[in-house]
Image (cartoon, rainbow, N blue to C red; front, side, top):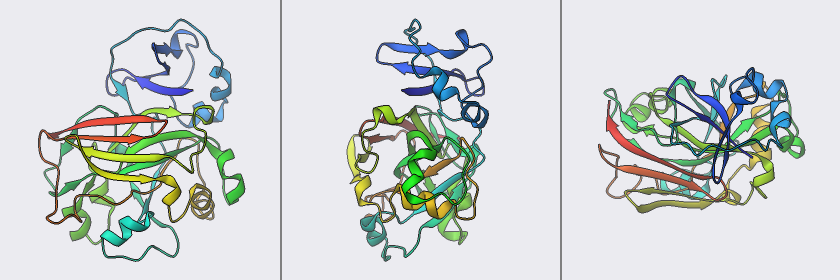
Length: 278
């Protein structure tokens, strides 16, 4: 199943994406909550799993598939070659940072160049969406707590990231977390531990990798994060990026107005975002 949120920004409603169109869930269940904490807590994933209502062919905006997560947790240097290209050793334990939930962006919306930072960069990542509350989750049970998967582009304002000596501001500018294009549940993902991912800028491949290359895999990430942080339904964990980002190229390459970034993950789809001036 592929869950989407469609409509103008701030007015998205939940739906199921099919090859031929979208099932608008509020036309079947007027009281269904938006795709977020209440949606998962109240068991709506199971309630809608086998819906076969009429499918509409619609041309509408797609928003981020998850509404108002309590937190976005990200992994740094979680692919060995990405750590190496930056001149670092792979971390001994997961390196965590966060992005503001307000940075979430639709899968086809523009990425806005901020006035407060230059050197804007791309990072294709597999994102996990938490489906049920958990703390001290064991590695072997990790997948039981995941509702599904998305692509996230962990857009980064490198000037702010490095000059601030911490990453939050440079990672959290408005529009800096395009995600989607849908929330893909386990019935459509055979093995999240082995998915190809890549990023293209203006049609040129910049990043290629596979989730099997992670320093810390999904189970290890879930176990580490939840040791002392309660995971809430709807939370997002973005699992790190492979090598090929712009800042570590020679010479460095940064995004400019008019560029188009495409992030692709096998079995999930692609994000396509044009760079614009705020």
